[in-house]
Amino acid sequence: MAETSQERTEEATPRRKKDARRKGTVAKSQDLTSALVVFALLMVLPTALTMMGGGFMTAVKTGLSRIPKSLDFREVTGQVLTLTQPAIGGLLLIMATAMAIGVASNLSQVGFVISTESLTPSFNKINPLNGLKRLFSRQAAFDGAKATLKSGIFMFLAWSVISSNWNLLFGLSYLTPLAALASVATLMRAIAYKVAAAWLVLAALDYFFQRKQVNKQLMMTKEELKQEMKDAETSPELKMAMHKRRRELAKRRKLADTMKKASVVITNPTHFAIAIQYEQGKDHAPIVVAKGQDFMAAKIREVAAELNVPLVPNPPLARQLYKKCEVGDYIPRELFQAVAEVLAYVYRTLNRLKTRA
Image (cartoon, rainbow, N blue to C red):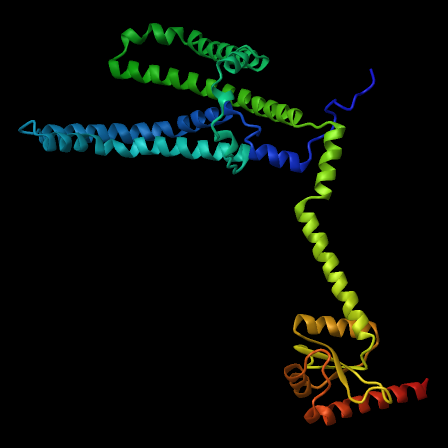
């Protein structure tokens, strides 16, 4: 069957991916975050429980020695704080670990994304008909099958650990309460580690599947790709850059046309540049045809070099000309002698070069 223009066969462009991220369409597996949090908690739980157990024993001893004499609210709340304070360290360790791993997992999956569009109220989000469609959609069926498979795997792993320790379970009645509790805790820890490891594997597979689904969702038709390329060519940023470039080229052409009339450029040599026009027998005095400071001075020197207009460094004269003259002005009488000496130097140099040639 021939491929139609409406088939999504093209990979998503960076612009489309950026727009999708802004709308909250990113590849993310909540299972991966949950599995990492559970696995991290299993790592810190022994330390946290030790801290909480020791704190609990300390709290009991302190509480028994400081029993409130009345049921006054202040004394009761003070007693509660006294009992709970020693165990707060272990609780904070658990909370901090869960929060840190959760944030790190989300950032590693999607990066830092602030999506206001996904938080914008919309009737479609609370429409019962749309809710029913999502409930009986293909995605909902897939999520249900995934949850059933995950639960089945977890139950199998738990059963495998329990079935291999029947002798231990049947012998609990012969143990002391403390030893029995330690045996059950060991059994539960083995189950938790196996379930967490399997959960991590399933969550990693789910994350790669989510990425594949998002990439497939963002794929474009040939028409969409052509339209986006057309829009990019006429984007406001590109138009502004093109306009700026055209303006710079126009200024450069105008400067080049002006500098063609110049006889010499007197420089500071870097901060100022003043282009002088003088033609013997035609001009009764030298004329300033261009002047500039810093960046503009650099442009004048650059164009002068391209047009082979002589550059003569004379800082005092350049500063005086820049201060007292505007473009189109004749050289002031008090500076005429200094400019004449520069022009005479230029003419002598040019005549010498012509003679050697």
